[in-house]
Image (cartoon, rainbow, N blue to C red):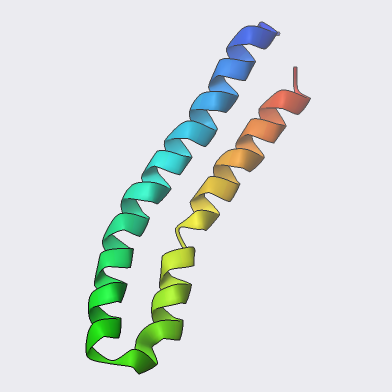
Length: 72
């Protein structure tokens, strides 16, 4: 079985890289959503939903971290 320290590092990397990827995706989506809302205010709901979708990536990273933590 792997050492607990290495498992903790792996869990941290899983959450950290998932958060970084999500942030990069949200940056581009948010900029496009603001541009679309500036032209048509009716697109606010769609822009909000599309901005939240990349957050699921962080949830997946957190699930992986929890599974690693449970296997320590």
